Image (cartoon, rainbow, N blue to C red; front, top):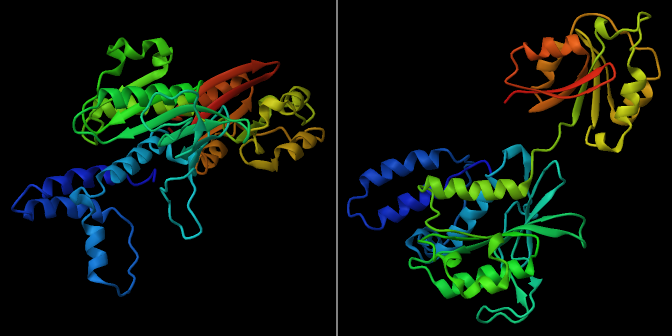
Length: 362
C-alpha cells in the first residue's frame, strides 16, 4: 500500500478513457503504469462476466470505494515507508470491509500509531442524519494501549461532485465530538463546502480541530501536501534508531586499554529512555562486539580493548541495514563523524566524557 502509488494515476487515466473515442494514446500512457506492478504469471480459468465486472470498476460503479482506498494509501504514504507495517489477512489481502479493521501500524517516537478503518465509537446527541448514538468514520489513527487508546486523527472520505454543506458540517461536528483529542479531517474529491465559514456549527466548540480539504485528487499537489502534513503531524516524529555504535577507538581509552567513560555509558544505557535501543555495537576500526542492549550493559563492566582509529567505516557499514544510527563517541569523534560526509548528521547531547550523535543515509 505504501510502496506502489498507482491508484491515483489509474483513476485519472481510466476516467479520461471513459470520455475519449480514440483510446490508443491512453493505452500507451497506461502501459508503463501497469509495468511498475510486480507480476507473477498464473494459469486459471473463469467466467468472462466476472472479469468484466472487475474491469467495469473504473466506469464509476464503485468510484467511492476506489477513492476511499486511494485515501488510505495517502495516509500510509505520508510517512517514510519503513515506518509502516500493513496488516493483510490470511490470504494476503487487505480487506476494506464495513467493520472495524486494523489496516496498518505506523512507528513513531511517541509509540505505535494504529490505522483503523470503520471503527465505531459512541457519540452523544449526534446531529447527522441517521446517526443514533454512534459514529463510524472511514479512517482513524489511534495511539496508546488497547482498551485505553485515544484517537489523534480522523479522516472522513467524500466523493461528491457538488459539496453538501449540511452533510459535511454534521460529519465534522459529530466525528470531532466523538473523538475529543483528534484532528478531524473531511476530504472530498470535489470542492470543499466551506464548513468553517458558517456559524451554524460554531456553538459546538469543535471546529478549531476540524479541517476540510476539497479537490483532493492525485493531480492537486496543494491539496495532497496539505493532507500529508496533517497526517504527518498526527503520526508523530520518526522513531528513534534501534542501533547504537559505541566508539571504543584510542581516544576513548583510559590508558589501560579500557573505556574511560564506561560508568557514564552504563548509567545512560540503563535508563528507561533508551529502551528503544535493541542492539549495541562496540567498534574502533573494526567491530569488537555486537550485543543486545541488556547484554551490552553488562559487557561494559568487563575490559574493552579501546584502541585503533575512529569507527567511520563501521558506521557506514551499519547504515546499509538502518536508515539512521546513534553513535556514542568523544569530542574528537564528533569532529570526525561531522566531516565524514554522512548525508544526515546531528549532535544530540553531551554527557561527561561522552557525546551522542546521530548519523544517517538520508
